[in-house]
Length: 294
Image 1 (cartoon, one colour):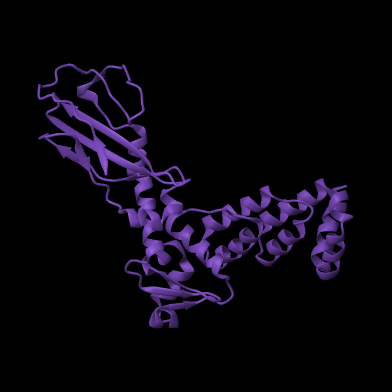
Image 2 (cartoon, helix red, strand yellow):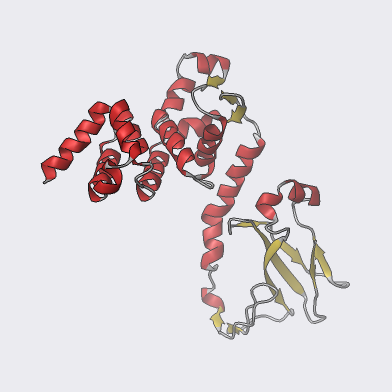
């Protein structure tokens, strides 16, 4: 509930509350308008306490619910000329700036929320709850509920599976035993929301391979950027193998350039010696490029 302490002179009140979630985005809780006042005004939030507690990782950072409110009110007299004051939130100081009533426009923040954030949160909820799901993805040990239209628009590979007379369309189930549960979960989360949560080195390697397999090119590009930015002598060989396996010349070149720039740490390491034994052709190719650059 939101309590608004009203003044006796107020004849009309409009309140627009938002809930701020843990990633900093805000969820629109709907507009409330009141024109009759007996006492203080109570507005109910659209989310129940049980729902908030069940999803506390999203809504209750450090066990605190954060609200943002925009309120406007009138004393019943027609406005002529300018608005004297605008208040944002409970703790914000007055903004002593005149605003013409003829050129009033929504704030940049609210406009941005209207365009992107509400939609992102709605699709996150759609993914998490599996509302009206019509296809299943079976990974190594877990089955994920998804939506054919989302999978099809985000991946041409899934689109081919689900729109042609393949077994996946008939059975409404896609078996992907070669992908781990966590990789499938991360891939689906990105397909629904464009979000990459807590990406680490191992998960980035696996997610890159999944994105390439299902031709989710934007996801593959983001994983590739992550790998390039986190190269070090201890993981360089992993990237060389990955890039060679997926015929990614850009990623391979980035790994090879890193090897040339850190040749002592790379080529004298035990990891590279082992790599040269298990991947002689790739190691020889890299070393040949090194010598050709001299």
